[in-house]
Length: 71
Image (cartoon, rainbow, N blue to C red; front, side, top):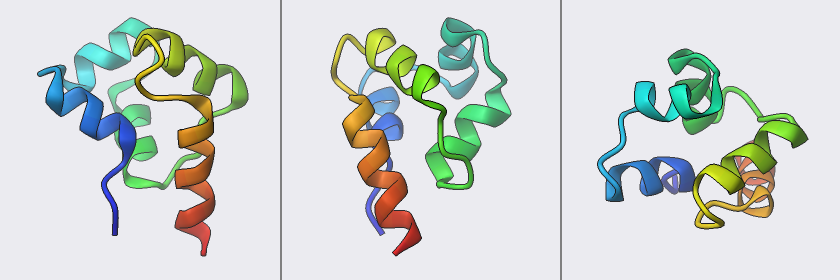
């Protein structure tokens, strides 16, 4: 199973789940569920993640990961 692009970004930039969650005003649990594939981010949240990562994690990547998780 491939690693979630958000997790890769966070680890590369030494950002905790809690720290990233604070940037987006969401819970740490939400970040954890997104990264584990248990929660698919809404379109608004996906675009917020894209903005927060300055385009390093795109809404398209998030959708692709979610689609592959279902297969």
